[in-house]
Image (cartoon, rainbow, N blue to C red):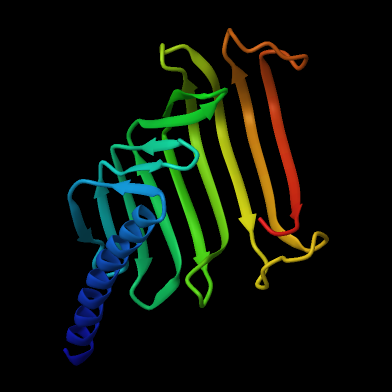
Length: 206
């Protein structure tokens, strides 16, 4: 009984901490040029997870002009592990990409999209991985740009920040399987590509 009550109190503390931490993060981003807006917040997941459901998240960068929004996102961690987080995105995503002096508006739909991130002792993301299944991307007119059965990627940052030009600041991998390009997309590889993979290392300070 003591263990059950103690864990329940720990979970309640964790749920409060996650919600307040998200609000603080949103305020910090908004104060530094990236507006983070959202609708109602709700906590759930007891007993295994501490989950914060965020309705209508919307992120806009005043500096670059890029935008992102979704119907809902779930931020999840465990009450005993504050170093690993998972974000699941639900519903249609709207993406605004700066291009040639304007913002191109894209729509992304998928069967499942999630990100898993690890943070270091300074609260900065040190590793992240994402996956999207059944991804379909279209333009503002509803024309298909591309679809992919699976899209996955990873990023990793070293523990020590890169200063010199020959120091690694970021490692990135990206892989897409069974990519089908839209009618407006013409490439030497044809309309269907079985697999596209990328591995990159960025040197010097970001």
